[in-house]
Length: 324
Ligand SMILES: Nc1ncnc2c1ncn2[C@@H]1O[C@H](COP(=O)(O)OP(=O)(O)O)[C@@H](O)[C@H]1O
Ligand SMILES: [Mg+2]
Image (cartoon, rainbow, N blue to C red):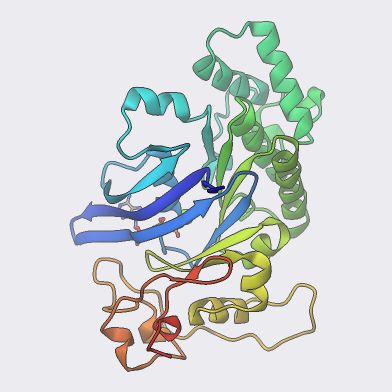
């Protein structure tokens, strides 16, 4: 049997046209999301995570455009799809919780009404009463009691607002949800509550989920697979178990070394020297080579290929045949 991923991102190139030049925010990005899986897309700020998510949703700002690659959902390429068809998929099949959306809730509308509005846009035939019942049911699923459905956003805590956004993204029963930095603005205890609400939703609805985060501890807590991104490219893809215990790419290794261990023994944190590059003029060859502790002669000359591993791939010359 051939196993086909629910969402396949293939050689995605998304660029921004700016006064200073072309920002290559994603440059040949490839990874798959399997049915029922939670994938963590992780990397330092500015590496292209949000751009990847907005590309999936086909909701790039004006300066951005997809210059190459495919995003295959259920056998069809979203990049080539008509706007009319996309409107049917967005919100209904794939939905997103945007970065910072907590602060973008409409302050003058009750939270339940804002969720109801989503139903009226995507499923205009649903009756008022049924629509409200669905709002209450989805809010309860994410842990917000019915009594709070008539609250305004300012009456809700940060954690509740984030859950309400998750409810909003789920109310039309999508198959995929993309959440961009869903717990970044929350304190640790609330983070854990929101993550467990997300996990519960994934199980209850057999959702497939992409969690965008700069925080590896979020990935460790709920993701099945991980795609590590650096400067517009994917360095490594694999299962969380394998990548956390046996990171292959030197950037993944460095990133793991720069985070405190959650459960294991205390370790010395390692600083990744230098800064992420400007994506208008990215380094030649492997983009990580100027900061890499394992670089070899060829690293600034040749862009590494995606070398398959047991559970994903790694893009590093050290793993290519003949380069070891
Ligand atoms: N609207 C935009 N116009 C121009 N450049 C942008 C825009 N949005 C993002 N970028 C640039 O694209 C790169 C990737 O950004 P982003 O996808 O937001 O990264 P991340 O989400 O990983 O922090 C950065 O260099 C950023 O400055
Ligand atoms: Mg971002």
